[in-house]
Length: 143
Image (tube, rainbow, N blue to C red; front, side):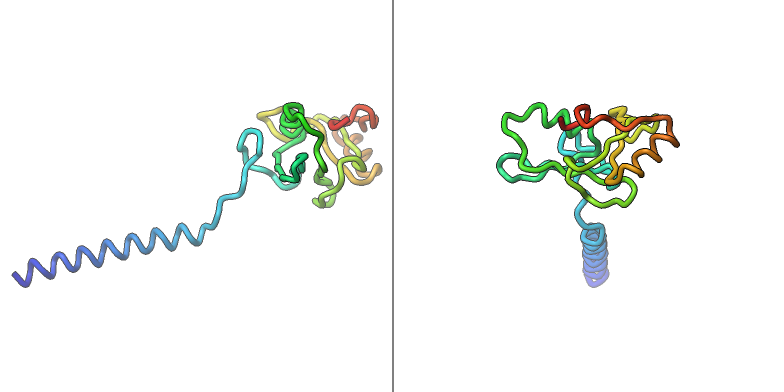
């Protein structure tokens, strides 16, 4: 009987170790990064767009196309639209940004080719390097 009992205690201890390791690994990985509010895609921080809706709730998007598609479905005006300056990685108000359409695709799934810059000089530099042009203010993605 003693051998049988030892076997079960060893099996139970082994099971406890496996479960504990799985829980520790899950905890160590942390929460997964939140995806795009439109399609759940992973968000590259350099192309991130945040829209604060009419109720004050923030929504993050992987690119300008997803943000625009989501915005078109809303019935109330957003409180704020923030975009990421590609040169610095900093978040800026979309109303102050310069937008460039170029040959560089930011998201292959959406085909987005519009890039965001805080400074006109950075926008023009990108346009020159990648065969693009600075969008007139009236043609910006959130006009």
